[in-house]
Image (cartoon, rainbow, N blue to C red; front, side, top):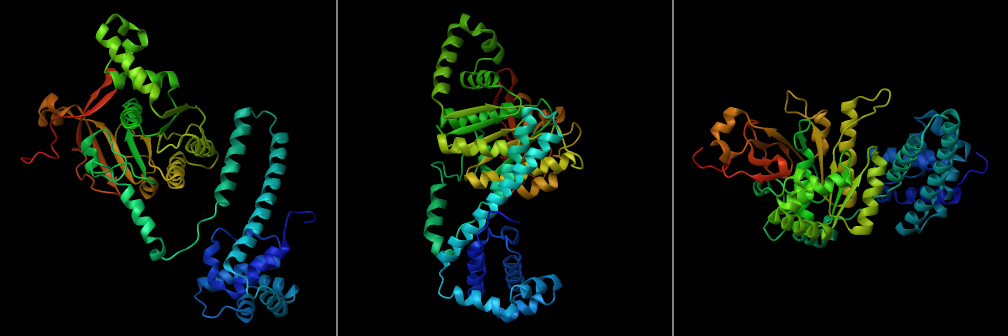
Length: 449
């Protein structure tokens, strides 16, 4: 490919250093065969990795040639460049090179590959624009964001590999720093009993399921209020349904205890007690470190880029994504699979930002299960369900004392879970001012049950 962005010298040095020091391949785990421009260097790198995976004791020019002989095309490519003599020449060229030298030239190889892919993406983009004149701005932006997200994810290199002893002290300090004053690890839930089962830990994803119009957003607002307003922890709230006006009204209702409708209508002004409560709530919410972003067309790339920006700008320590749903599924992509893919994105993002993420999914009207729960189970740290209690359960729990709703924890990587889906943490859910509170009666902690 004439005129392509490349640096054959750096490619030659990378494979030469690895012939001398094959164990160093684990130190450059962001590099793959596709990042090489030259076919010979690509093939040598592939064979070295193949020999390592096969636990070959000695990796040198002879073993590389012998392994290549079993792959006709690979043998032809290496021999066309000089075979054994070429391998020995690059081995001699890089004798004495350090690990830092290897990493420096690896960065050059990756940089050239990244630039080539950017140019290829630009050409593809121009072609698609010409073939799809009906595309609107949202389609153009979505294509660009998805492509950039894929490229940036691929070219994000891992850190240097070290023995556990080398990182032990710093890692232990990190563990100690995660402990809160109340003895929990991670950020606490507003509902105290939940913290006995799970907290919001760095790098972890909590998924809460509920049926349509059954309090998912109100739960999210309660948790955001508790962390940002009560505790002063920076929170980002990404919304797929509520505009900021609606969100603001609800979080003021949570803080003040005044019904949402009375705040929206302005009726609270005629009641001195309510007026005082709302004005005090407004001041508290104004000072809270919380960012609310509404969009009807969140894409995976847009979620990631916005979260990275807000963490850099405001130091966010907790992210709420309200909620996972799929409106338009592409050809050949099943809806439940795409829901699972969103779970993977959010779990990866929690790790990348080193913060907890809380998200939500919608249950079917007839079962307690999230769509594609197998994939969600693999990536979510905790899966819980917000559910209405049956009349029989309400009577069992003492009527009003035990509330009309409960939280059932089905899966929990960081603590206990519940085996009986009919029993959970009892809740008071006051719908007119969107507050969730822990009910006075809890069957889970009642010693007589």
